[in-house]
Length: 489
Image 1 (cartoon, rainbow, N blue to C red):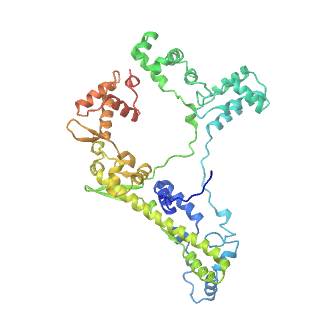
Image 2 (cartoon, rainbow, N blue to C red; image 1 turned 135 degrees about the vertical axis):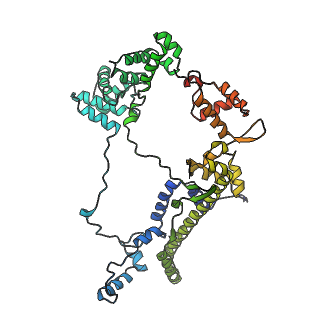
Image 3 (tube, rainbow, N blue to C red; image 1 turned 45 degrees about the vertical axis):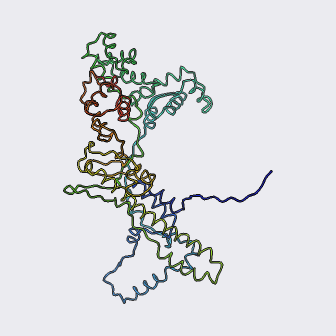
């Protein structure tokens, strides 16, 4: 049986202003400028002071008499240029209260910035295909093969699937042998190794292009018959199976290591490159650290004066005319939104400085020396307690902000680490252990690399009492392979 009843609940909900602040806080500097531009476009009641100063009219004829008739007429026209009523009625007025200009700069005087033209990986292959004398059918098969390659330059799709694609999409009926013949043509293109169906075929294509060298011929034999032993670095088995000395095998291995396992990457055009813009700068002034916020994090924004005047004008008129209530509500909404956005930007600046200042003071010795051994164990709660903010706020700052120091530019998250207790009872950062681990592996004999058990013993001798699985975890976190894969001749 359905029944209606009333319930009272106490809930915590974020206000729109709080949500806006949280979103702005996690935006990095490189994206903040874009976010501000979006807000300026959406809200005409918000103005950028730097742009407003640039757009202010300058006196074009400074030597002209101020009482001149021409100046007087021009001044009268400029005073009558903006009218609140005309603003809402004129269709040719943009969001910022200025009329669209019909005549811009002279087209002949505009200077275009030259753009460097560079062909992509697939365009390069298509150009090479155009130069090969082929029948129409073979040309279509070649195009289908090129279009089926992945970004690494490999053909991952089965030949039978290509035959089906040709039949259904292009109405070209081909046999698998014809596709294989055209695949050999594609594999002869540059970069060497393109069109391979697996790593072994990719390496062999590259080696066979210069198989006149004796060392390369031996490398072909290794890739054809002993690729698994080579990848697992079982050099003893290779020496016995091939009857080679260690010096000869070393030359063969060096030939293989010169090859490109991903031929598509070498010609790919990178359209987007990650550019790190630091949010903070820390400088050392005779042993005293100075923290500054990147100026891009502190834009000069203000509420539009024309919108404030418009609101005051229509607010008075709306008391007599109810039809203008919607206009008043619209203008008030834009003004409130502009004020909230400016407050959120200011709150963002204060939170960033407060958080980074706490991190700098906590890791003062590290920022003075740049030595990882001086990094203190630090978790998000340590900073949150110092600045009296929530852990989630510190996390948003640490996960997306960078600081530039005299030793490089670092993500704030990299300064947080767990504590490890030494035999003496002192707590040190796991960053210090990773640094020592990296040094031990860097100094090891590559013919007999240190296993994780041996690395654990070395660390215990230095006073770091950690388990072997922890050593393995740190080694993997630093992208260092196991001892067997670090072995060299």
